[in-house]
Image (tube, rainbow, N blue to C red; front, top):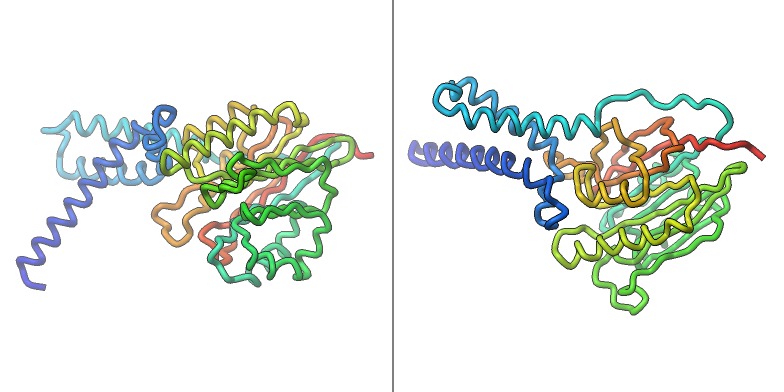
Length: 335
């Protein structure tokens, strides 16, 4: 490479690093104001990436003795690093799994966003068979995907189904699904679906001994622009309106298209009185094909009385999401 081009490439590289550092510094603070704007909320999702970038920036400042002539920048960088580190630690600090005590039931869930353009049907079938879950959520399922899955042996292992292919949602269960309801969006009932995932959600129940568990399986739209952000808020409003129909044991799971540091995520927990079953274990699920932006957006939210026995992500099955496997312990007596 000629010397002038080498110099230009080096300048562009350093300009990119500086821009990345400044953006991470600014977005560290704007991410806390998502309730005022969905644009600000979008800046909350990459706390892990911000922390890593700021850590390298802090090391670089020490190595170049920035502390002597730019102490303010060093202080702000350290503060932003601590803020991001604390946010990540609150969600991902390691904690032991729950050891079942007393009467109750184990319930294994499998959450899979297959990715509508993925064609590795056999890989998804093998994953479902290997997981051996009691309840399976499949999302972004279109007619082509359903045609491949419905006649497969693994699909027939689940005698109870809920289907809404217009929204791409399929729920499979080994247990009878009681008082099931497909909650539609107004756009869906009027035949004017504005977004591929704006099809509503499943609300159903399963009986485990003397305990009835409410299951809500959903895939809200990505709140990327004002219209989709408004749709996301309608999702939350509909869920809050369902509280009267829920039992004391509630499980909300699916591709929520938000991270644990988002305003919308906090609203899920606050409005429904739930906790994240995967909390204290950092399990990024998307986007598989761009690892540097890996973030957790597939969630399992549960009532306070439900505990996590085991959880994991993977394996890769051709989707842009990694599947989530989780075993929950629901207290209650057997009949």
